[in-house]
Length: 183
Image (tube, rainbow, N blue to C red; front, side):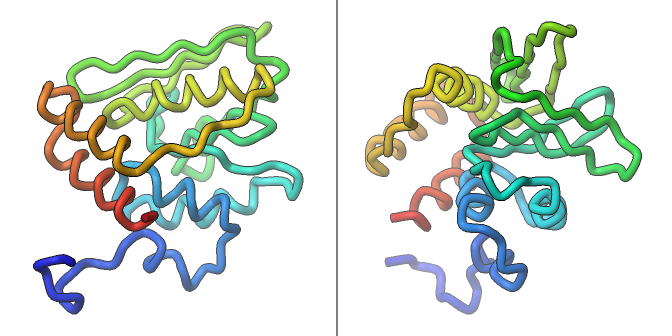
Protein backbone atom coordinates (compact mmCIF):
# COMPACT_ATOMS: atom_id res chain seq x y z
CA UNK A 1 0.00 0.00 0.00
CA UNK A 2 1.36 3.38 -1.01
CA UNK A 3 1.58 6.28 1.39
CA UNK A 4 0.83 8.70 -1.46
CA UNK A 5 -2.89 9.15 -2.11
CA UNK A 6 -3.96 8.07 -5.62
CA UNK A 7 -5.00 11.58 -6.68
CA UNK A 8 -1.46 12.90 -5.94
CA UNK A 9 0.38 10.03 -7.60
CA UNK A 10 1.56 10.83 -11.14
CA UNK A 11 0.16 8.47 -13.77
CA UNK A 12 2.34 5.55 -14.74
CA UNK A 13 3.47 4.73 -18.26
CA UNK A 14 0.57 2.35 -18.84
CA UNK A 15 -1.96 4.97 -17.75
CA UNK A 16 -0.35 7.72 -19.86
CA UNK A 17 -0.28 5.53 -22.98
CA UNK A 18 -3.68 3.83 -22.49
CA UNK A 19 -5.55 6.25 -24.77
CA UNK A 20 -3.30 5.30 -27.72
CA UNK A 21 -4.33 1.62 -27.65
CA UNK A 22 -0.80 0.36 -28.26
CA UNK A 23 0.12 -3.26 -28.82
CA UNK A 24 0.79 -5.11 -25.54
CA UNK A 25 4.45 -5.78 -26.41
CA UNK A 26 5.09 -2.08 -27.09
CA UNK A 27 3.34 -1.10 -23.86
CA UNK A 28 5.31 -3.67 -21.83
CA UNK A 29 8.64 -2.49 -23.24
CA UNK A 30 7.71 1.17 -22.66
CA UNK A 31 6.75 0.44 -19.05
CA UNK A 32 10.05 -1.36 -18.44
CA UNK A 33 12.33 1.38 -19.76
CA UNK A 34 13.76 4.06 -17.51
CA UNK A 35 12.21 7.16 -19.03
CA UNK A 36 9.56 9.80 -18.47
CA UNK A 37 6.60 11.27 -20.31
CA UNK A 38 8.82 13.11 -22.82
CA UNK A 39 9.38 9.77 -24.60
CA UNK A 40 5.69 8.85 -24.78
CA UNK A 41 5.01 10.40 -28.19
CA UNK A 42 8.04 8.63 -29.69
CA UNK A 43 6.81 5.30 -28.32
CA UNK A 44 3.46 5.94 -29.98
CA UNK A 45 5.15 6.83 -33.30
CA UNK A 46 7.33 3.73 -33.08
CA UNK A 47 4.37 1.40 -33.46
CA UNK A 48 3.87 2.55 -37.07
CA UNK A 49 7.41 1.34 -37.92
CA UNK A 50 6.81 -2.19 -36.61
CA UNK A 51 5.60 -5.18 -38.61
CA UNK A 52 2.84 -7.48 -37.38
CA UNK A 53 5.26 -10.41 -37.18
CA UNK A 54 7.78 -8.81 -34.81
CA UNK A 55 7.53 -8.47 -31.06
CA UNK A 56 9.17 -5.63 -29.12
CA UNK A 57 11.44 -7.11 -26.46
CA UNK A 58 13.16 -4.00 -25.07
CA UNK A 59 13.37 -0.27 -25.77
CA UNK A 60 15.28 2.68 -24.37
CA UNK A 61 16.25 6.27 -25.02
CA UNK A 62 19.69 6.81 -26.54
CA UNK A 63 21.75 8.91 -28.95
CA UNK A 64 23.02 7.86 -32.39
CA UNK A 65 24.96 10.22 -34.69
CA UNK A 66 24.20 13.17 -32.38
CA UNK A 67 20.45 12.55 -32.51
CA UNK A 68 18.33 11.33 -29.61
CA UNK A 69 15.79 8.61 -30.24
CA UNK A 70 14.52 5.17 -29.27
CA UNK A 71 16.72 2.09 -29.51
CA UNK A 72 14.46 -0.92 -29.88
CA UNK A 73 15.14 -4.66 -29.83
CA UNK A 74 12.46 -6.73 -31.52
CA UNK A 75 12.25 -10.43 -32.24
CA UNK A 76 13.52 -9.67 -35.78
CA UNK A 77 15.80 -6.63 -35.64
CA UNK A 78 17.52 -3.85 -33.74
CA UNK A 79 15.98 -0.55 -34.69
CA UNK A 80 16.89 3.07 -33.90
CA UNK A 81 14.25 5.69 -34.55
CA UNK A 82 15.36 9.30 -34.21
CA UNK A 83 13.22 11.93 -32.54
CA UNK A 84 13.93 14.23 -35.48
CA UNK A 85 11.89 13.72 -38.63
CA UNK A 86 15.03 13.63 -40.79
CA UNK A 87 17.30 12.25 -38.10
CA UNK A 88 19.61 9.27 -38.25
CA UNK A 89 17.63 6.01 -38.25
CA UNK A 90 18.78 2.46 -38.71
CA UNK A 91 17.30 -1.02 -38.75
CA UNK A 92 19.52 -4.10 -38.59
CA UNK A 93 18.00 -7.57 -39.00
CA UNK A 94 19.20 -9.87 -36.20
CA UNK A 95 20.72 -12.28 -38.73
CA UNK A 96 23.06 -9.44 -39.83
CA UNK A 97 24.31 -8.74 -36.31
CA UNK A 98 27.85 -10.15 -36.01
CA UNK A 99 28.33 -8.91 -32.47
CA UNK A 100 26.91 -6.56 -29.91
CA UNK A 101 28.91 -4.90 -27.16
CA UNK A 102 27.65 -2.83 -24.27
CA UNK A 103 29.11 -1.11 -21.26
CA UNK A 104 28.04 1.43 -18.68
CA UNK A 105 30.17 4.11 -17.11
CA UNK A 106 29.21 6.95 -14.76
CA UNK A 107 25.50 6.27 -15.02
CA UNK A 108 25.23 6.10 -18.81
CA UNK A 109 25.70 3.24 -21.21
CA UNK A 110 26.83 2.61 -24.74
CA UNK A 111 25.82 -0.14 -27.18
CA UNK A 112 27.86 -0.98 -30.28
CA UNK A 113 26.22 -3.17 -32.93
CA UNK A 114 28.65 -4.83 -35.31
CA UNK A 115 27.34 -5.74 -38.75
CA UNK A 116 29.06 -6.94 -41.95
CA UNK A 117 28.82 -3.34 -43.21
CA UNK A 118 30.36 -1.61 -40.19
CA UNK A 119 29.35 -0.76 -36.66
CA UNK A 120 26.61 1.43 -35.21
CA UNK A 121 26.95 3.08 -31.81
CA UNK A 122 24.20 4.31 -29.52
CA UNK A 123 25.28 6.13 -26.37
CA UNK A 124 23.76 8.22 -23.58
CA UNK A 125 21.64 5.27 -22.50
CA UNK A 126 20.48 5.64 -18.91
CA UNK A 127 22.09 3.20 -16.48
CA UNK A 128 22.59 -0.41 -17.51
CA UNK A 129 19.71 -0.64 -19.99
CA UNK A 130 22.18 -1.02 -22.87
CA UNK A 131 23.79 -4.05 -21.23
CA UNK A 132 20.35 -5.60 -20.75
CA UNK A 133 19.51 -4.98 -24.42
CA UNK A 134 22.80 -6.57 -25.52
CA UNK A 135 22.19 -9.66 -23.37
CA UNK A 136 18.62 -10.01 -24.67
CA UNK A 137 19.77 -9.51 -28.27
CA UNK A 138 22.44 -12.21 -27.93
CA UNK A 139 19.91 -14.63 -26.43
CA UNK A 140 17.40 -13.87 -29.20
CA UNK A 141 20.05 -14.37 -31.90
CA UNK A 142 20.94 -17.75 -30.37
CA UNK A 143 17.23 -18.67 -30.41
CA UNK A 144 16.87 -18.77 -26.64
CA UNK A 145 13.67 -17.56 -25.04
CA UNK A 146 13.99 -14.73 -22.57
CA UNK A 147 13.37 -15.96 -19.02
CA UNK A 148 10.64 -14.52 -16.85
CA UNK A 149 12.30 -12.68 -13.99
CA UNK A 150 11.16 -12.83 -10.38
CA UNK A 151 10.10 -9.28 -9.37
CA UNK A 152 11.56 -9.61 -5.87
CA UNK A 153 14.92 -10.70 -7.30
CA UNK A 154 14.75 -7.75 -9.74
CA UNK A 155 14.14 -5.36 -6.84
CA UNK A 156 17.08 -6.81 -4.90
CA UNK A 157 19.37 -6.44 -7.94
CA UNK A 158 18.14 -2.90 -8.48
CA UNK A 159 18.78 -2.00 -4.85
CA UNK A 160 22.31 -3.40 -5.11
CA UNK A 161 23.00 -1.32 -8.23
CA UNK A 162 21.87 1.83 -6.40
CA UNK A 163 23.89 1.05 -3.28
CA UNK A 164 27.01 0.44 -5.40
CA UNK A 165 26.49 3.78 -7.13
CA UNK A 166 25.98 2.17 -10.54
CA UNK A 167 22.59 3.84 -11.01
CA UNK A 168 21.24 7.09 -9.67
CA UNK A 169 18.45 7.40 -7.12
CA UNK A 170 16.20 8.79 -9.87
CA UNK A 171 16.78 5.80 -12.16
CA UNK A 172 16.25 3.48 -9.19
CA UNK A 173 12.84 5.04 -8.49
CA UNK A 174 11.78 4.90 -12.15
CA UNK A 175 12.76 1.26 -12.57
CA UNK A 176 11.36 0.27 -9.16
CA UNK A 177 7.98 1.78 -9.98
CA UNK A 178 7.94 -0.10 -13.31
CA UNK A 179 8.59 -3.39 -11.47
CA UNK A 180 5.86 -2.70 -8.89
CA UNK A 181 3.33 -1.85 -11.62
CA UNK A 182 3.95 -5.26 -13.19
CA UNK A 183 3.43 -7.22 -9.97
